[in-house]
Length: 120
Image (cartoon, rainbow, N blue to C red; front, top):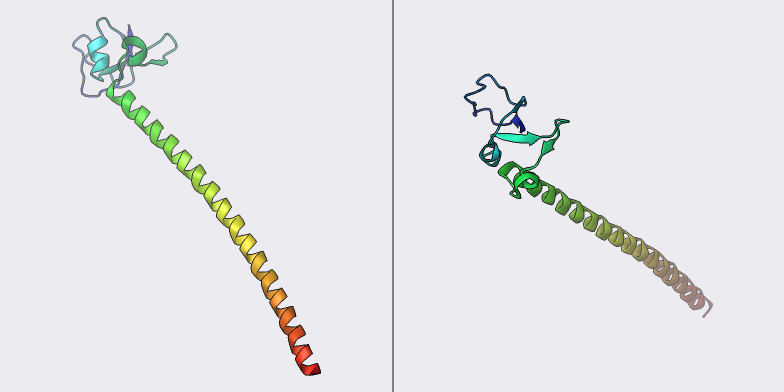
């Protein structure tokens, strides 16, 4: 099976000079994949997950999935906060219009009352 070295501390006895990122063909790679020493690759050098191969999520795949979940949670929180901010802004605008109308109405009523007092 084709594998890519991902752990710099791992040195296979049959290929001591292999560097991180290099691809080699090996047999009996399940333990190496599950221990995070190498990752399986297809003929186009695309990574094949341990879950696809063995039905097990290895540490780096789990960490990547946890980061993905955090990102989705942050996106949902951001969207919720943006929605709340828009609602609050709309309420503020409505309150400003209401206050302006009340001031204008009270001002007109006050002016009318003052005019009536002067006539008396």
